[in-house]
Image (cartoon, rainbow, N blue to C red):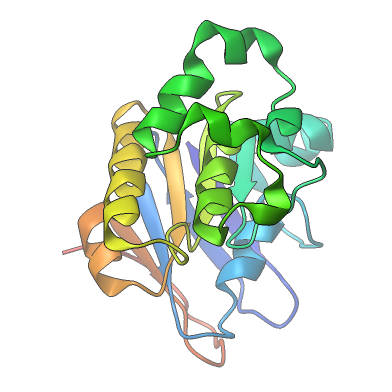
Length: 207
């Protein structure tokens, strides 16, 4: 379980919520309400104040690299530090075991895409490759920022099925999305953010 207690991020109202294993929490709110900032703060990528616990361990009790390994952020516009996607999959053993190929197949991606220059790979393909990258080393919690924003309906359906599978496998998922229908399909709990954050932001169980 991921538990957030009185998390303070800049001018946002303090946030308290939890995400159980096998549960998807959706963060809803208009542009500028802080959805991405919350995900990045939980991932320890941006400054914040307030304790965050994973299975009882507070994030400051472990190295930042270990926290980010266990609580994995997947950006809406993911960054790449290699010329091809293949170079970003450092865990060769897992890649050769077939895990990577299974993830690519689930996302509707051909294995040959790994060796293509990322500069000529489509935005939607890069977004799905980044999701595969995030899942390769088996994180405990996934933080997904608009994971289907650049995808067509067919690719969106594949990504949503993979997210559902991660939840059924016991992972916690926090999803930031503008897509109300997607939230209805995936989320068990919702965190509602106002345009101009005020005190009293709460998590609500999805209907």
